[in-house]
Length: 313
Image (cartoon, rainbow, N blue to C red; front, side):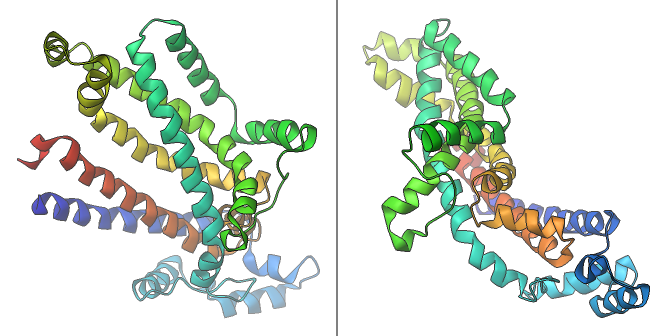
């Protein structure tokens, strides 16, 4: 087990290096000059050249990457070009709304998707199964921002049950915090529920055809125990796998959702950084998301040891 974990940890290091390199190159190859954006439309060529020199943008790309990489290894993500604040400090200021939104989305998703998938597999071919398949196709087809605007129109503008936009920190009260996150979490969870419910249905339906299910039923075990303790338990590995893969969808969806609902999290900070060509901020946020995604996939790999003991040997 220890060797398995060490191999997975070592394998993540090259991934992070490649991600950092790709992000760095994309910021440098994208159109737009941060110096020109900082100075505005009336900037002269001399002033732009001076700001570029001050920011170190005149150096070659390998030199810039080496300098940035050395700082990252020492825990320094650089300083924002526009806010003149360390990137790590900006991430710390904006992390609570993003983590809150992602956590609530996961709670909604797991509470709905797995039971729906299990019941649909149990009633394979029935009306609930067909309804789930239709919902899955619809969930994948509608963009997150469309779902968000529909929820705002229905629950905020028409029914006036929930606030339209904004965010209240949890320290200011659980109910205000929850009321501002319900709509964005529901909007973000639709595609995630569709994905996990569909995979759960397929995995449990396949498990239900195995011999050990027939044996369990022949022993007189109740249908509920057959579904949960035997079918779902043996279908856990592909379900956990797609949950880990879906984290990438969640991270991408956070950026769109925070923009729609005006939530001051890392997603909206990313959009602001891209629009202003704030290279250190873009690189720092992307690297932060990449580390989180790699760590979650590492936890998924570790969970295989729990759900499938054969991997230990």
